Amino acid sequence: MVDLELTEVGIVKHFFPKISVAVIELTAPIAVGEQIVVKGPATDFEQVVDSMQIEHENIKRAEGGQNVGLKVVHPVKERDVVYKKM
Image (cartoon, rainbow, N blue to C red; front, side, top):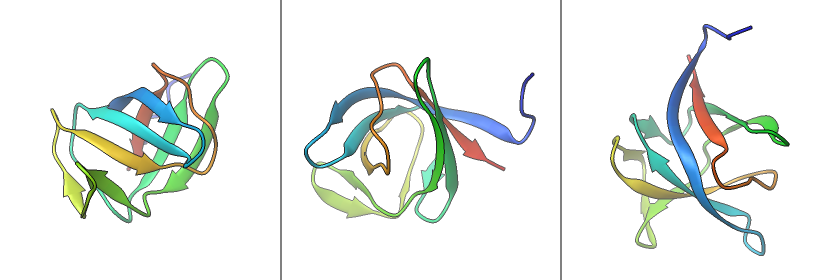
């Protein structure tokens, strides 16, 4: 069943376990404060976007086509899909 409240916003490209940061290749805009859901074969959780960075600079909003570093509350795997909760 597809959740109609979810919109795909990106894909996990890399995960840094020591600092719990995922590199996400965005396909749609995302902003700090928005609710996201991360899903994959072994991943399924939701969280609020607390902080995002591009090239080690804190940002409040990122657009599709950009790669962002995102602090995550659980480990993620490459190719996990990131959705924005509407």
